[in-house]
Structures are given as C-alpha cells and as structure tokens.
Amino acid sequence: MAFTGKATYSAGTTLPELAEDVSDLIGIISPYETPLLDALGDPMREATSTHHEWLEDELLPNKDAINDSTWSNPGSDTQFDVDNGSRFRVGDQIQVEGSEELMLVTAVNSNTLTVARGYAGTTPENLADNQIINILGNAALEGADKPGARFTNRIRRGNYTQIFTATVEVSGTDMAASHLGLADELDYQKQERLRELLRDLENTVINGGQPTSNPEGSGSVRRSIKGILRHLSTNVFHVGDSGFPTGSDLNEAKINYVLRKTWEASSGNVDLIVVGGFQKRKINAFSSESRTYGAGDTTFTDMISIYESDFGVCRIVTTRWMPQDAVLFLDSSRINVLPLAGRSFHFKPLASSGDYECGELIGEYTLELKNEAGHGLIRDLVTS
Image 1: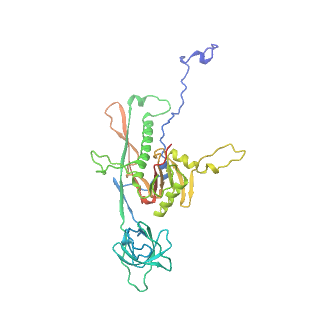
Image 2: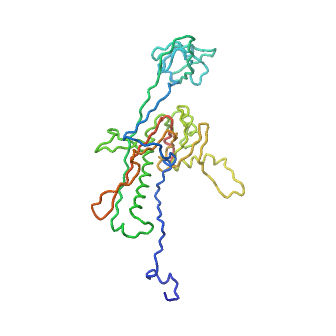
Image 3: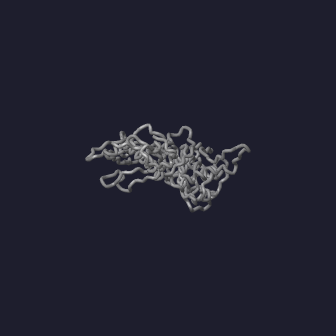
C-alpha cells in the first residue's frame, strides 16, 4: 500500500485492506449459575422409575402433650388426658417441660393417664392443657414379664420425574458459513440451551410443584417435580408465628431459633443455609458492628460464607432462584437430584425434513428429599 500521509482513522473503514476488529469471545450476561446444585453435587445413583421412592422411619416418640382443660385441682390431680396414650407405659417417668416435678405413670386407659404426683420427692406443680410432656424412660419391675412389643412403620415417600427439553435447529447455510467467536453454530446452540435447562432444573428443585390430580402424568397432564419448598411442613416458621423471634428482618435470633428447633425435632445435621441476594446481605450484616480494621488495611470485607453455631456448621449458598422472603435450612446428606437412568441431559439428533440440522436436548430428573423434619424454612421476611 502506497504511503498517503493520512492517519488510518481519516481514511475511513471502507478501504478493502482494513479488516474487521471483532473479539473471539462472546459475552453472555444472562444469569445461569446453579449454586445449589453445585453444593449438593452429583448423585451416587440414578432413579429407575418415573416415580422415585425411598423409605423413612423414626423411633418411638418420647414426647406428647396434655389434652385436658378440666382440672379440679391442677396441683394434685392424679388423672389427666393426653393426645396419644399409646406412647405411655406403666412405669414411665414423665415430666412436663419447664417443671421440676417428676411423675410416675401407674395406669394407662386409652388416652387417660393415672400418675403418682411428686415422684422421687419432687414438689407437685400445677398442670395445664397443651403442656408438653417428656417421657424420661421406663422403669421395669425385676422379674416381670416382657412388655408388649411396640414398633413404628416404615413410610414410603416419593417424587415424580420431570422432563426438561429444548430444541436446537440450525439451517444448512448457517452450518456452512463462517462465524465470529465460534467454530460450530450447532454446538454453540447446544451449549446455550443446556445452560438454560440447568438453570431451570435448579429453579424447579427449589420452587416446583406437582399437579393435584394425576401427578404421574398423562397425555394431557405434565409430570413435574415437587420442589424443596413444597416438601417442608414440620419446621416451617413464618414471621409473626407464636414463639418465633419478633421483627420481620432476618437476624441471628431467627437463624438460631430454626437451627435449634430442627435439632430438637430430628437427628438432622443442617449444613446449608440457602438464601437470595437480599437475605444474604442481611447475614453479612451480622458482624458489621464488631468488624475492625487496621490503619494500613485497604480492603473492606463484608461477607459471611460460613455460619457456625451450637447446632452445626452451615455453608451459606446464595441463589437467584430462592424466593426473596425465604431462608432454607438443609441437611445436604438427605437431598439428591437424580436423573432417570440413561436420561441425564443429552442431545438427541432428529431427522431433518429440509435444509437444516435439528435435535433436542433432553433430561429427566427428580428430587429425593428424605426426612423433611431434618430441614427448616423461614418465610415472610422483609425484602426491602
């Protein structure tokens, strides 16, 4: 090219010898991270049916409640009704929560207990309806016959699989043409659709629900996953519930309350606290008032990734797909996201009826959530 004395920019961009300046990288701004699935990890097995089931069991309960609102003398009555008389045996030592008095069960008639008050030299105290009774243990008589056998029944729980699909279609011309930033348009479209399907899988695992009728699916009913939020019922706490710490903001009192209640109700080990962005900032603020910095510090750190309490060490997972008013408390050892055998995400080429290549990304997954009482949930927190 002959020297013209002009700067390149003044020559314009229409000269044939000027090449386009386009980066080889394609920027994607849409969120597609799956932090909860990443925290749970890949399962060790697959589901083998569209209705995946598992077994749950529990020990015989050692708590009950008084179900008696009529007292002639609540400080000395030796008979009262309870919710579940079958939980008690003659010889049980029992104690009402918050009371120092011990009682000994001397007779059980349906849901009516007869007890010896002030057992072991303790002082009788007033009793009231709905008080919680702890069964300390049974004292058997020496040489007595064996007591009647008692047992629990194992329960089958289950969840259905859900099919996730996306179509990929690229024209023959598009396949043949050169593209900026990629070598193969079909492969690029596969990657994009797969990111979307993984994003939707995490969203469904958290928030999904099943149809109220025909959840097994049919030609007109779509089979879907029952998500984590729909599984939980035992340790679900709403702002304003009786006994729940006051206020609508997330704070340590609320987190420790749920961790303690979950610990009391189960042998679960909560190790994941799952939140959205707003509640994550609330957790980060727990230590703001006690944070200190040296004169030479140039980095301001305001993030809590691990929360350690008396009831376990919890990793904090922030996901965009969590409802902003909610906080999940999960025992990750009791949760699996399973593919149906041979149906993890894969690409299935389809026959083309024209000048194009097409196929379908397919995956079929289910959620296994064992022992829902080992997990917890807070709802109705303030979000602004």
